[in-house]
Structure formats: C-alpha cells, structure tokens
Length: 356
Image (tube, rainbow, N blue to C red; front, side, top):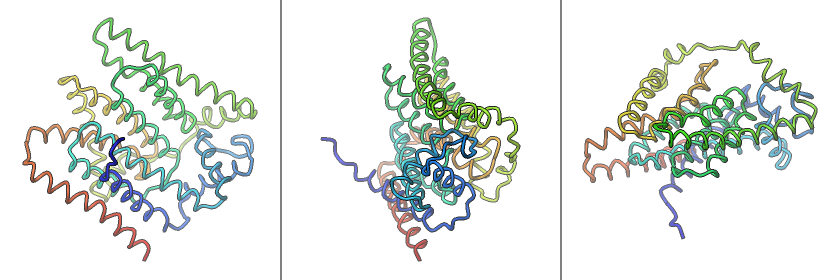
C-alpha cells in the first residue's frame, strides 16, 4: 500500500484554502465570469450552443459547467466552487510536475508562491484555464511515462483532441505540437520509424475526438453554425492588447516574467542540445504552446495562465545550477521547512483576512 504523503496533502489543502479565499468573496462584476455562467446556464436550460445562443469557443467547457448547474443548482456559487477545485488541481499539478523532474523542494515552493501571487487576483476557471489543465496533464504524462507505449500515445492524442473542443485555436496548435515535437529527437532511421509510429497513434487519438465532436454537432444540426462562429469568424476578431502593456506593468514580478520567456526557451533548448535532456525539450515545447495563450489579448488575465509552464522551466534551470552549488543539507532542510510553513500560513492568513 502506497504511503500517504502528508506534505502533499498539506500543500493541496493550503492551496485550496488560499484559492477559496480569493474566489468566494469576489463581487459578481467580472464580465468573463458572468459570460461563462450565462453560457453554462443556457445549456442547463436545454439550449443548443451556436444554434440557440452565440459563443466563439468550443462547446465542451460550457457543457461541463452546464451539467454541474443542472445537478447542483443554477447558481453562481456552483461555478465558483467548481473553479476553486479545478484551480487547486492546476496549482497542485504544477507542483507534481516539478516534483517528477526532481526540482529541489525549496525551489518548488518558491515557484508555487510566485505563481499563486501573480494568479491571486485572476483565479477563475474559463476555457483558458481548462486548456492549461489539459497542457499540464500532457506535460505530466510525457515526463512521468518515459517508456514508449501505444496506450500512452493514444491517450495523449485524445487529450490534445479534447483541447480543440475547448478552445479551437490553441487546441489545433497543441495537437500539432503533441503529435510532431518528437521529430526533434530523431537521430537515425530507427528513431525515425519510432517517431512515425508514435505520431500516427497520437494523430489517431486526435482524429477519434474530432470525429465524435463532428458527429455530435451534426446530430444537433449546428455544425454549420459552429464553423461560422468558431472558424470563419476568427479573422473578424478585433480585440487585441499589445504585449508591451505587460512589459510596462506596474507589478514588477509580472514585468520581469513578461521579459524572460524567450530567454528561458533558449536556455531550455541549449540544455536539450548539450545534455540530450528530454525534460528540457518537453518544457521548451509546451512553454511555447502555453505562452500563445497571451495572443492576441496580452493582459494580466491571459498572462498568468500563459506563463505557468515557463515558470516550471525557470525552476528547472535554477535547479540545474543549484546542483552544482552543493548547498549544505542542513540549510536546505531549514529553507524547506520555512517555505512549507509559509505556504500553509499564507493560505490560513488570506482565508482569515477575506472572511473578516
């Protein structure tokens, strides 16, 4: 029987409390939150997306929340509780990825604190956060399941395909990357054959999801409406915010993080080339996909979602440097204990402050 990891339980609960303290007290003024609730509410009332009401994203996300509203009641509090759970899973999965690539504890904790800090005013669960969750699951599987398996490749293809039903633009790019990035690992004919086999199985996974999705749209008689709104309508989208706004941001952490993605990407690629480090390649590829979330609306709301994999990449690079510094074990234990206590206290303090 696997031993219960008390440290992970503490991190999960502290994260849950912290996120709840940010989401629950908010007044209902966020237009995106209202829009998401209204779309889910329409589905809960039996309306068909694209045909009976307009949306410009895939239907899976509002459908998922619509089912929750139908089961637990058509109230905003239901979507907020669901957001707390999903956002906690996102932060915890980020921690698990850093754990699996053997980043030292104190670096993981600092990365989590930074991530929680920049996200605290923007915690919600919309289609961007849902796509981020898919990306994190793919990265986790790619890193943990290193052995080749058709089941793994098929599942990754299915996950990538699901992202199309959430946000079609990012989903298509994620599918291309998930299917084809391993070509960068090809060194000879044998590895090329291995890549082709893996790519075809992943493509099959994407095809299965896409085929089922199209069949459902045909059954609902809204395929043409979906094409009009979600594909043909993309060129008409004119809402844009320049990335320069992030670079000039008043928040120094966001300003710093907005400048360094290209540097982090370059260092990860160099690490892969020099050390044949597959983990660095995975982080490099998916950090590119993740940062695309920021385009074309480069505001803080999109940025805190888009920078997540890059922060893992930063932690990974710092960890490589740290391995050469040989910090005394006693110092590491002290720093780790201090930071884990800080994470727990931050969660409790924010909860108390927001409830008073």
